[in-house]
Length: 460
Image (cartoon, helix red, strand yellow):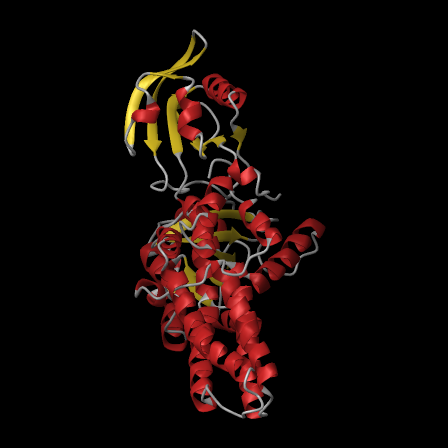
């Protein structure tokens, strides 16, 4: 999907609220003729004579036929989301009414909007940069306090300002290096190589920090895949049900009841955790159960966190140590969770507290110490950096551009070490600027814009 220059001059329309029947629906128009064309079907005040940011009651009519009583909000360019004339028509939420109003507007010359076209116009008209535009979609899709805060910070320019500052410093040196190319015969130096090295090393540190923040950003945006693993009947399904506060998984004393994955999301401390209840880890001759156990082991390898759950009434320290060694070899963060504390062997509890003092003791069935477990889970995510207001990268496109920026900056340092000629040095600096510019939209292609905005919903 792409937008031609001619299409960008069109007045567009789309439903801005979710599809389906509701109390109210909002139909949005944007473009030079948005107010004029709406005025042709609106009976009330003359919209073309009204001030910006005003709301007016009236009816939408097709000839003499009244379609609905509406409220019309008027936003006059450039004081609107798209920096164009914008009209928002609040109708009753009937799908029939919505379709009738949009069809009427299309008959008057308005074009149905493509996905993301409103936000793309806001970007093209300088309302915000590309990173901020992408944050609009993230904000709409935010389903936790942390993902909302990250998207809001990016939409308000927190991430963009850091990138623009890095880029501005590099542009200064790039221009001096380029200037030296015009004076090669005079052998003059406008840019101190020592100062350039200091700057590039400083930029590398900043870029590295942003790259490293992506692990946290990905967690904030997409949730933490968390596997509940352990022997059959350790209480994995009971724990999932207790955390969800509903009977999601089948609970039975019969070993091997869970043969495939049961997955659901839980919001803990503003972060989404995607909990996966798995088949019990054991040797089995049951073909179906064996497939489930194999899949469990694969899930554990790709998890961000493992809750190793064991039954205090039916496990010994030797077996626990053997399982812990296997978990250590996986290299995935894990928590030792001792279940059924109400039925525990006191000697085993004493041994665990001595040998494994970080063990968390719970009763999933009685819902004892679940708050303590949640606190430990949240502690492992390490949101401290995010909570201090530091910029966190949540977008894979930004991560990719930052990685390429790092490679180019390392090439600049290598060039300085090897005393390469100015034209090669300038080329590496230009590459670094290019990749940084891709993030905020100083450097764009039609394909890039089409890919980004095609993922937006229609009406945004």
